[in-house]
Length: 99
Image (cartoon, rainbow, N blue to C red; front, side, top):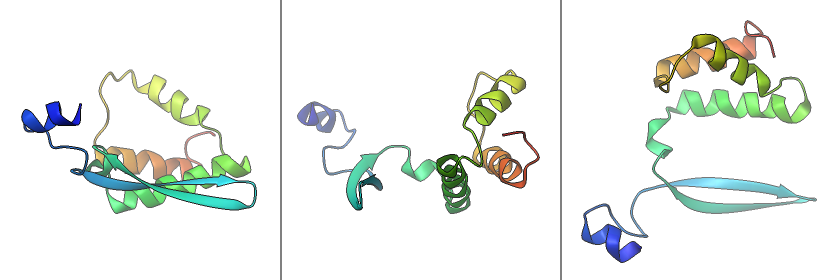
């Protein structure tokens, strides 16, 4: 697969943007660097808002169903842009969208 993607100009196994995946298991944390085509699509603000919201999911202060409900209420078929995603995350964190 890597040879094929390199041959058609899509890069290879060592190209692309890296993201860190952090996995907590028991009392330990493991971090893994992984390639992600999505990494450059997110602003630093969006990442920070997402982390705060994920933290609330973990503690039970918020529910992922709020995002699903928001999505369904929009009737959209395409993914919103960064500015709109940031606004939705900020509204969720401020309690303006029911969680």
